Length: 202
Image 1 (cartoon, rainbow, N blue to C red):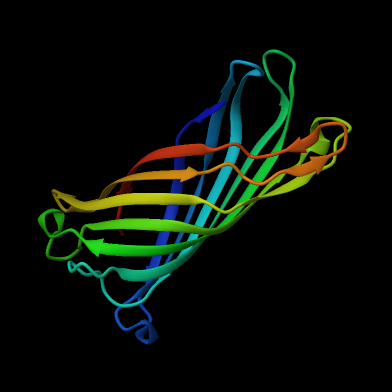
Image 2 (cartoon, rainbow, N blue to C red):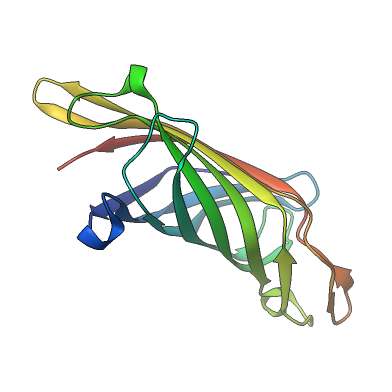
């Protein structure tokens, strides 16, 4: 299966003194995505909501030692309804805890804002599939234990406007197996996502 579509979001960052130059970073993104599958058909305009709350300690560094951080991400996708082939869909909700490292990328940085490269390793993930919405099945929560995330964020400025341009890649490995009535053992297969991000700062 494949999901494509634009999201619009808000990002808020704060720098509490207790974090020694670090930051608390919150993002929320909302939009609709189009579902496509060779087996199940097409479903357009499905709502999606993603959030990310990250805490970093210390300022971004250009040394080999990263700025450490921890992040909790969530992702909800509403695929309820029927696809073009008549297959029923259901809601999906993911919660993931990540260990992060962030570096300053000096060649892409501006005096007022650094460019950053970020790498994350999945500590634990939980993927809820509300299968009961698609038939006489039981809902399952699959546990995800392997994954990684990479992100590059570079600032830009033009005629008084400023913001950042970014690229984010994320991948999960196969989850564990969970039992659902009438379906037997089910799992969340390995998947990846690629995001191109354009932001304007206020």
